[in-house]
View 1 (cartoon, rainbow, N blue to C red):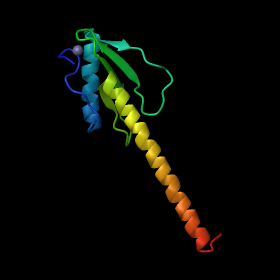
View 2: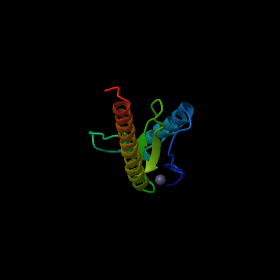
View 3: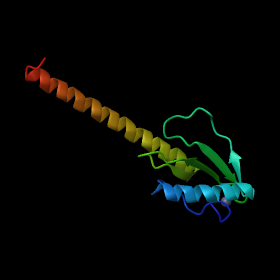
View 4: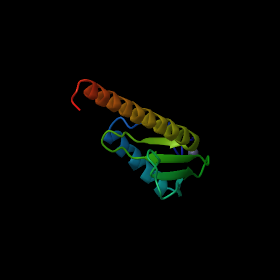
Length: 116
Ligand SMILES: [Zn+2]
């Protein structure tokens, strides 16, 4: 992290306006060659970034995920992005298991009540 790239990581964009401001800064830094596009896999898994950049001054790699409706996106350095994606996937798996357990409890309750 340095003045030529970004001085703070963003774990979620508070608003579309915040993201638009960041995107404007990003385009300016790309135009001035402070940042270069860092290639990432074209095949995206859930929560993975859409684009990567590398600072030409401090060599930090940055990963960007754009907000979309409830998803608030992020701009994180490589290690933070990797840990965050891992955490988001774990939370997602937990939510899916919880939903399945609630569904099975509901079905069990309906069977017990004689609806089936
Ligand atoms: Zn930098």
